Length: 479
Image 1 (cartoon, rainbow, N blue to C red):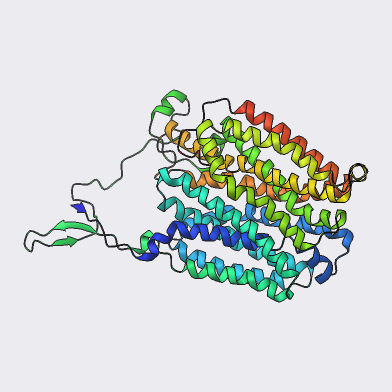
Image 2 (image 1 turned 60 degrees about the vertical axis):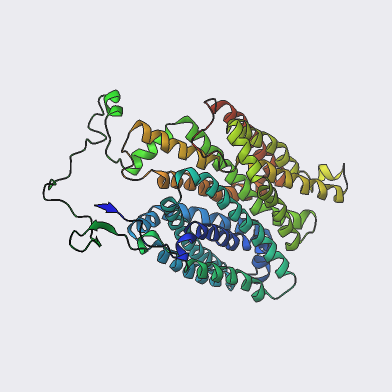
């Protein structure tokens, strides 16, 4: 009995990886769309007190992260139990449209929060189901390149969302501004409908028919001589008393809690997740505080805020592949450490323009130039750090599978490894707006940036010390 090559793949089958790129762009475009216009929505449409704008902004932006963390286990469970993940993603797009409509036309703070909650639920299903399809269709030796492309599309969404929103908000009506977000969602949903998953293609098994000379296609069924009971495999905990013997045996699949515990015991994984959390705090702090700060310090409006977010994202698009080559050639230690160390003075400098002490030394226009240059430098430095957590959790999963064969069952463990990275990133995205908003209200924008700069400096030293092992050579260096 031999396997046939199978039928010719339909056009939609080749879109399986491409659809994740589309999903990355659409999801982050819609998420970041509201950033430059949120202060105007709060003060103009919702009639919020201007003194409460910063805290409202922080709560609304943090809510996406904390809800994502809370529902991730449930979403992952439902996604695993659903064979037709493409249908699941199309449904998530529809939910996203509903959430965006509620967000756009909310006239109360409660309505705005409910809309963002619906968007967050839809986004979680899109991301987790998309990663499940990606893990099942991309070869391991191509994963790094595919993830790099995902980052490009993700960055493009983060870049274009605020720019489009700010440009339209200042030139057309409020409804037409949000119409662009609906167009992007509908285009994404339409392209998603063209995707075919592997299980939608007929799987055949070839068997020669001695009478006709033709091939019969029959399911792979057990033989008469096969055992009725599957072979008994030794459990992971059965030899817990003898670590050496435990590592030498073929382990049965372990629980997710035990897997995460074992991965977090690895120094590089723990360091990478801590660094990724700090990077998320930094980025989300900028998103939460920059629009209001430039409005107060420079009297800039939403259009200038959109341009600044554009300048923050452009270095990633330009430098993502050179940065990947650098990490692949010299390892993660030097690029990541340099990224945090160089980011520290840039973050401090970002907080200086607009303060009384700084304005005594330079004029306002010079301060605006310094602020802009510092933001661009932050964009350059973060490119050296981006993907650090994903790389190291994948490496940790590979090491764990080597140390305990069979511990992940039939899978490679990449899905649960990505969940670990995703949760820490979302945790940082949750903490960032709340922390920066609280510090800005209590001690001012300058000292908030100074604290973040010190944290970045500390992380640069920590990563340099912790990553003393040989560089990563598992093929995920292009991050």
